[in-house]
Image 1 (spheres, rainbow, N blue to C red):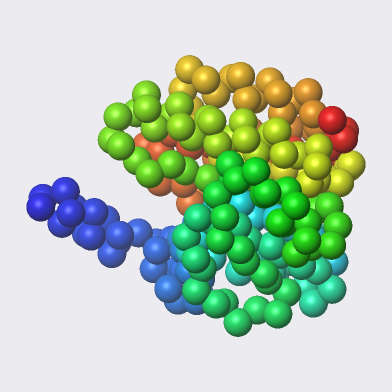
Image 2: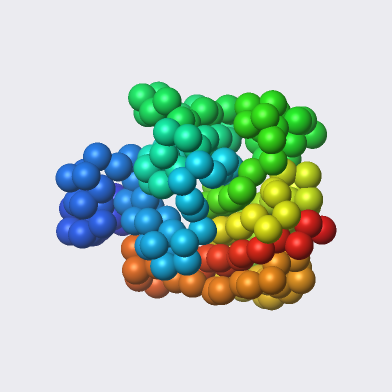
Length: 205
């Protein structure tokens, strides 16, 4: 009960939570993506963007603004996303480990994507070694999909939990892209183990 009260108190005093409500974003995490895009220019007008782990929709809202009417954002999550009322956004309920994942997202987009976003997290057990391992497994799944869903020269933003397996996925991504930066947005919670790899110029393999 005390932890629940503490969480509610912290949320009420969280400037990014308050700002997300003021600006109409579904999630405080929207400001993580906004900072990443503004810093690294990874999403442009007319792009096709895939957002893996998109619920509740905060990143979809941000990406929608940057791709404009000529672009498209496809969101995938195991949870349904309440309609955002955005004509350039499509969503599908699906597990990233589903064998039909690639076929399903490409059917919605009609082509490979310019940008892949992944903010995936597992259901947290509270045991960090387990949570870290599960999150890294999700990152590795996203990496395995890239050759089939991301255009050559495209960009990737992927969340990684710091820990003993993190360097393994870092190395894989560094090999697949010409430019990779490790970045922790200002909106990441204090004490969070997460960081983001911002990768540009996909080599196609």
